[in-house]
Image (cartoon, rainbow, N blue to C red; front, side, top):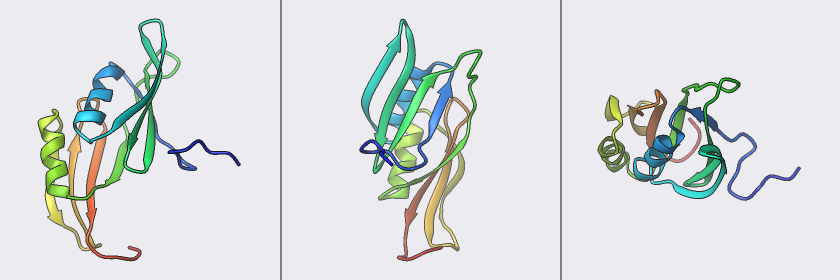
Length: 128
């Protein structure tokens, strides 16, 4: 099985209204790096953003593929700093950063497109 570099067996593909705004949040709010953008006229047909070891794909929503928010669990180096960055980029806090009983320091935000991002700093080695 061939998987492109930066992708995983399961890779998020987000359809969003105003996909360019979502890309800005992924870059400025989550520290992502845009690695590819294919356009179809004025429409973002497929953009790829690398966040840490994962690559997400983003496309402008359409009638055939409507916007569909989801929830994402993002491992970060520092949960408190990640929260500040996401909020500065326009996200709304839905859960303040706190130590969780399963070994993560975690907080949650919702972006302007309705996606929920769990910003999680692992505190202990090993499985959950």
